Length: 57
Image 1 (cartoon, one colour):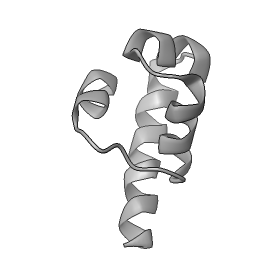
Image 2: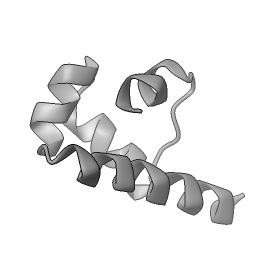
Image 3: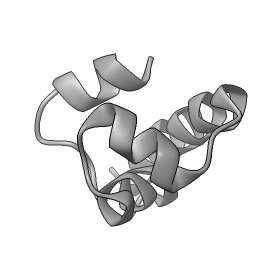
């Protein structure tokens, strides 16, 4: 499971990097806290719902 989480986090980081925005600016657009977005992108947490990931994509 940890390997899957790391892979998912890497994909989220790629989307974040491609956006060209900071964690703070992107989190605001996604209607979530900066720390939550950072945890998702680092693999420290996984979204319970798909909605945040869909908004990021």
